[in-house]
Image: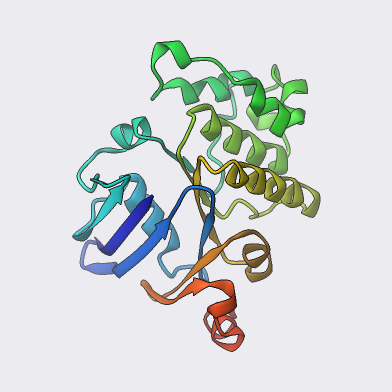
Amino acid sequence: MLAAESIDLFYGASQALRRVSVAAEPGKIACVLGRNGVGKTSLIRAIAGLEPVAGGRVRWQGEDVTMLPPHLRARRGFALVPQGREIFPRLTVRENLETGFAPLPRSQRFIPDDIFALFPVLWDMMRRRGGDLSGGQQQQLAIARALVTRPKLLILDEPTEGIQPSIIRDIAKVLRLLAGRGEMAILLVEQYLDFARSLSDHAFVMDRGEVVLAGAWPDLAEAELRRHLTV
């Protein structure tokens, strides 16, 4: 499982994270919730190795990976779907998917058929440029690109942002299916309570760079949740 323990993170003199601890385990979806600007993206960038931490540690399957660079975490099964998707607009759908080959051994550098079972629309658009896809299609492409790496830990940063409801339902269905296989831990960053609660098993609520609530959904008080999430 993933365990981020007492993470401190600074941007210059400004402290973005204060002793933040979260966990994710195979077969389940853990969700990090909070309003804009509370440190959610900083946390997952620290977990992925994109930001150096000033304190605490990140453990994965019993190994301390705190000092590992992002590409070595990717080889250990980390995959990040960033906020804003960050696909390559001038590359085709196929070429975008093939960028997921980078952390894989040569024998695994192919696009699994399962990708197109999960996202059938991508098969019909393989030759189209990523920039020509709709926002929802680009989000599906970004998730599919992460899945090409055969991840054991899938991290998604606000995958519902700017996406139409029908695509949100499709993405939720895919995430439930992936979790149900029991082989992958999923860490989801969200700010929409209803979507997060419908999908995840466990929640970590952040406010001002700290985790202020954590637990399984039945154990979290509704009034407290609303207080920390309402703008």
